[in-house]
Length: 80
Image 1 (cartoon, rainbow, N blue to C red):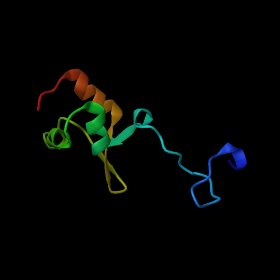
Image 2: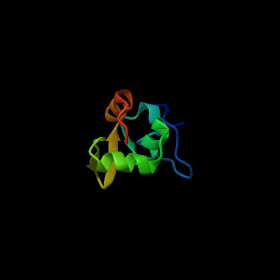
Image 3: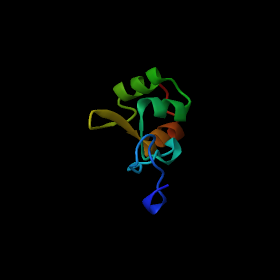
Image 4: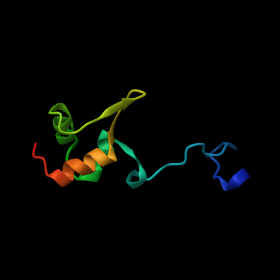
């Protein structure tokens, strides 16, 4: 541990600037994370995205799915 109690990175004396956030605490998920969180395949996620049933956003070249949108889709029970 160094200044402020932050853990050190391996082989470095620099603190983690962005400590890993658990998927259940993320506001937005990558396609793979959304697939795991929802218990459905990545291809199903992509089909839902293409059909306009699952909103996504692109940030810095990454396609992200807001957790709230994924939860709303699952609660509504939208079929493929």
